[in-house]
Image 1 (cartoon, rainbow, N blue to C red):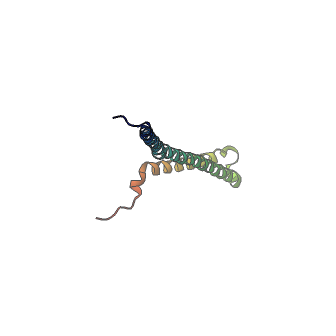
Image 2 (cartoon, rainbow, N blue to C red; image 1 turned 135 degrees about the horizontal axis):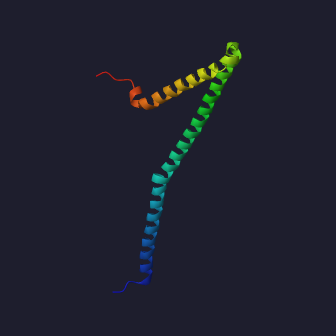
Image 3 (cartoon, rainbow, N blue to C red; image 1 turned 90 degrees about the vertical axis):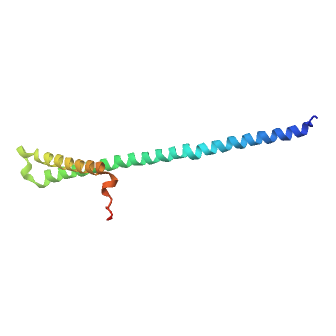
Length: 117
């Protein structure tokens, strides 16, 4: 028994429509579950890197201000003792870098308040 041609067209349109919907669903899923999280992560990393640059520049300017403060306020550092303000600022920078590294290495788990059992 032969199926009329208009019924085969309807059946083919259904399969074609289903395949189109399946493709659209797959594309939406890929965008939601892979592309969008990658974009969000990239944005997060960009803002973090940009913030790190600005904090680094701020700390550098603070160290320069401390150096200028010692050079201008304490005239005892003129002449042969002019290297002492540089030593003080270098030591201060090492202390700040050490504290920063210590906080990074200690991790979030160490900073939490321990609960009593």
